[in-house]
Image 1 (cartoon, rainbow, N blue to C red):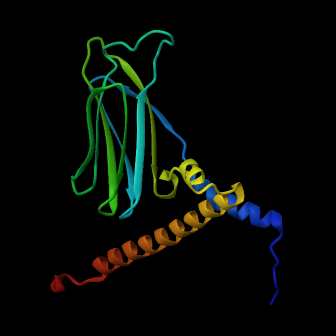
Image 2 (image 1 turned 30 degrees about the horizontal axis):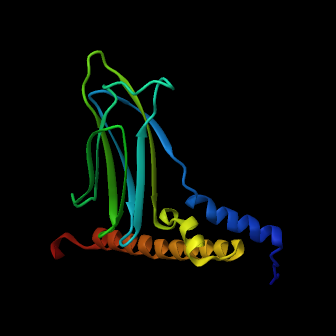
Image 3 (image 1 turned 90 degrees about the vertical axis):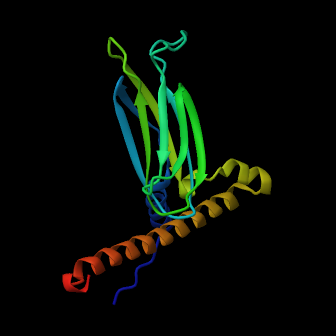
Length: 184
């Protein structure tokens, strides 16, 4: 049996690989007037979720046209509403999930003649990515290395919890598939 030793470069690469899924990037999409676009995120119970959205101004230096307004709703898979804003140009939300499952952010644009295209920038973070690490650093007056270790610890804990969540979800699905019909 061969013994493998991790070099510092290997450790950095592994941590970088583990960290990358949690780096949040905003999403930009086009929405035609009179249409709806929904984005879903599978989030586990008791996770923090934050989001912000805004309409991208098609002509810099000028105010947004009146036709550039959105209606936004964020709901859980059980139909519970976590955010609702009507006829807005931008907004944000934050909530702690009460149940695990798919959470849906839906964007509506009012119908206009002639039809217009609205570009929306949307940033949705949940779990470890939703934590405000700059405030954690300010409140605790910790040095940079300690802050990075706290981030990595939370990331590893989140990965661990997610693995158990997915395993439990898979076991439930397998149990449902293997149960004979006559047992109900």
